[in-house]
Length: 255
Image (tube, rainbow, N blue to C red; front, side):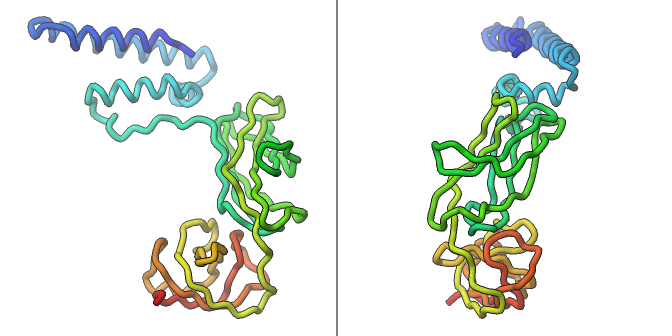
């Protein structure tokens, strides 16, 4: 990771902060030149790596964070809301589903175009591969996977994403395997909290922790976070991929 831009900007800022008022203007000019020089060096380093400057900073989150921190400390416009690149991560949504259920995985931090093996298993133990994905040029991917049918309800598991060369392995947060839902056509009335866990459909998290997807809700102006009672029946076929899918649903405020 290049350190020259960091040293140049740091030295310029230190000199500016310790200068007398009479020398401030000339030091401001020097600081401006130092920042411009650092920008040029970053562009040169990115070019040598075959990347543009934005992608190069994404590939080097520590340098990106240093630049943002410097801009925030100096109160420069445009830096107050800047968020540093968070680095490699594997996110799973929802965090609970039955065997055969669908979950969405989102990952970043891999080399561009890398082959990635998706695994599933108990935390801290070897993970059997269930599918493979190819990372984008930015080293990220989004995919939907199926919870293995041999997963045991009640178990806590994790998903993993590992590059084929073994250089990077990401582990998701804990994932809970739930009991399979009731058969299609079963009438259900459930009280819980509307959530934002759904990918294709609105969702409800029941008071017992069960997740429901709502295919055709009469929302009545309710939003995620509202406590409601939902009545409907278990759908036979649905595009929703989270929890138990309910059709013909109506929603009222919980009492």
